[in-house]
Structure formats: structure tokens, C-alpha cells
Image (cartoon, rainbow, N blue to C red):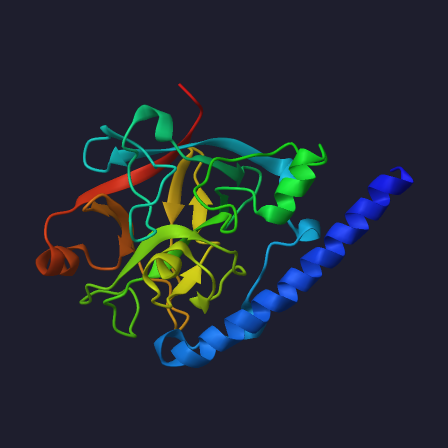
Length: 257
């Protein structure tokens, strides 16, 4: 690496650490306001710094939405949020969300939806061959966001509780909801907990979400499409009795066709 390139990388890493410190301060303030909801701990928040993110191993494709009952395609996850900062199906063929996944990872994975400001500098410098079309460059991951109407019990049988799919920053593996910047809270002003490392990739390239409740339990969950919003719940019947009809779906990681 040439001297100028080395200096550039060093300066970027210093900037990243400064951003990390600032975001931790903001997260601490959010926790104090919201600790009765999901009792987050600052030490469990994991921010995506350059050195700990495996950019070179990422594969970029799209997320196809299929009806779980018969496999019918319902379109692709949209590159635009709805007015509440939530993901749903695309409104037109040109609005497919590009996502990147580390297909070599066994176990929980994160889904990258855009390149945040720091990563974009590296992309434009030619140091990282990655770019995305996600709706917010400051929220580079697909995350689960705790539902506004939930009680504190999480996703489980007998509860209608739900989790939106939106955008946010990263959280560590195997942690319960943590305070963190996210698209729903930006759109509504309501602080909610998030989890980002909540997906696994099957050999069939189906993307299977999961969830960890505040008490550490891992419920059986279903992925649904309600009012054009993708969401998770732990009780399909209770959710439908409370909110109305749902199409239960599967996400697949597919190339451009």
C-alpha cells in the first residue's frame, strides 16, 4: 500500500472510531428513555466498523417474496420505505432492493442494504467493490424493529406482538433487542429496539429470519406481509385476530432475472 493510501485508511479508521463513540453516546440517551421496553445494554451494541466487516465475502442479489402456501412470487423487497420506514414489496420493477449477504457464513447472518457514509468513501476510492441502492446510506443493514403496539413479552404464542423489517445499524450476534438508530424511529419519532443478525441462509437460498426476545428466548416465528409491510410474529392466529388478513411469505436470495 502506498503512503497516501495508508494515510487515507488511517484517517478513515480514526473517523470511524469517532463516529462509534458519538453513536454510543446517542444510544445511551435512548436507552435511558426506553429501558422499560427492552432493557438494552450499551456494551452489546455492535457498530459496523471497517475492520470487522467482511466486505470481500459479500454476494449481491435481490430478495424475492414468495407466498409460503404455494410458492407464487409476490415481487421483490422494495428499495424504498413506506411512510413509516418499513420494508415491503416494490411498487415497480425498477425498485428492487439490492442486498448483500456473506454466503459462506454458517449460522446467523446480517443483510447489507446500502453503503453508509464511511464505506462509500472506500467504495469511491476503489478500495471496496460494493455499492447498493438502499433507501438510507446511514442505515446500512436490514433489521427487525420492535412493534409500536407490543407489550414487553416479545414474540411468543398467545401474543399478537410483531417486529417490522426496516433499516438500521448492526447489533451483535445472539442478543435481544437493543436501542439503535433505525428507519421506523426516524420516520415516527418513536424509539424502538432493533436486531440485525437475525437471518440464516438455507442451501435453497431461502432467507429465514429469527428473533431473540428480551428474556433470551428464541421463539418460533412466521414472516408475513400485512398492509404491504414485512413483519415477524410468534402467533399467526393472534396477529390475524387482532389486525386482519395476512399473506404468509418466504424470502429468497435470487440473482437478477
